[in-house]
Image 1 (cartoon, rainbow over the protein chains, first blue to last red):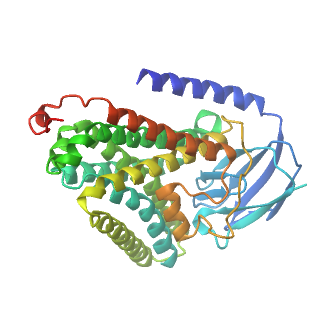
Image 2: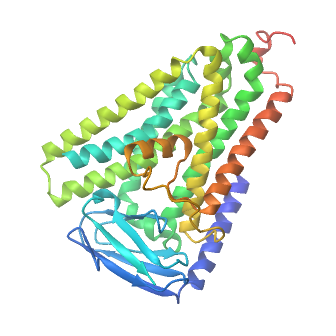
Image 3: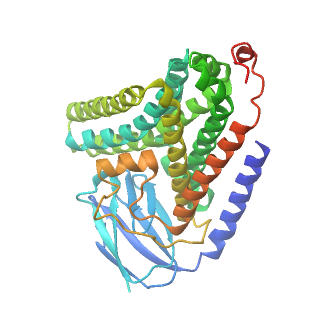
Length: 111
Length: 282
């Protein structure tokens, strides 16, 4: 149990360092409104870590998910989350709302 | 209604397959129904609570609270499953020889029952909170009538439970002689799969930076969002676009559990009060 507490402590501590280290990296702004991502195609620079800031303007919760970006994150209705993304190779990365996958999706174009 | 049905079905299957395996692994143990029902009930209660605090959780710990929570829950499940297998390996000798003692051994091992109930609880907790959030979202958007929503949810739940029951029924049809081996194998694969999901959340949180690149992409062949892909994802940890670290952690967990159970098997079993009389001499 003590080990687990230490581990959690270490995780929290490394989180804090992590947050300050990534504060100035490139950010991509996304908005979710009426179950549509705006913009539906976002752009980012290749080979540099980035932050996606997602604002959910709908009253309903969504789960921002992308297999290619390896993200799975719940966004409550009316809330905002930021998601750290690793440095990406150029390409077209699909993301979607896991609760409405067929209709609510978009792409991140990395070039 | 269809949307509610599909989402509920999908999440119930994921938790249900785990419950099915745990039930098969404890087949014949008296009182296991109570343990498993307790795990499911705790999971459902936790899921509702989790959904209510979803936003706070998402913003906690510099924005990675959700990832750390998921990783923590998965890590607990991995440890519990591994310790169950090791415990069973230690007592496997007695169990293999005298099958009637399986029930007694599992009951006397209150620890391993607690471990398995915990696994059931955390599985229901994770998948259940997704169901609650989704249903809540549909309900407040007013896109569907409450009746249709409830009908879809109940139907999805029934189908999910039926599928899990079939898994369980299939497993317990395995002759008792092989059932122990089969559930041990399933639990080992399950644990390795959960460990790789756990590390995926740590990578998402940015806490683990190495081997981030995708090793293979089989999403065109078998997407892990399809029902079959999800079932395989839950059972053996199938991922259609895993990172290098996920693959490494999967293999490492698999190897670690196999080695630990082998060591436990060769070590003399500790004396368990209710077993010592029943255990045949070597």
